[in-house]
Length: 163
Image (cartoon, rainbow, N blue to C red):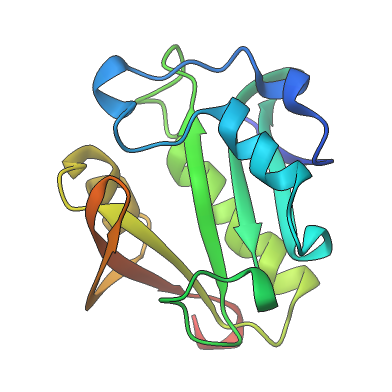
């Protein structure tokens, strides 16, 4: 596996439209159509960064990083948050989720050196994703947020000099 990131514009839905997740995951991840609709209408387009995860020339995953005014209400200032991470079902179980997290942390460390934490909310019922996040170095902050699909645990990954 040689995973890498490719930055996407808020209009690059077609690049990732083919990604499919398992039906049981659909309760936990917004559809990519909805994600890109929200990106296109964002009040803070320069603070929301969409990425595809590629292996060689094949797009295998996707996620969004948010910062500043685009942070969710549960996030403290001076962090970045990870959203809508998905890996195509044909590639799941092969380390692409963990690779995407490492690549996201590296992007933050390189491009936002003042930021020392990457945070996310994971649905309490999404045991598979939670396990991937914890194995990737995230820790449970003990905070809970109630989102549209139910309770979410807030996780944090220390990055940069502190991590």
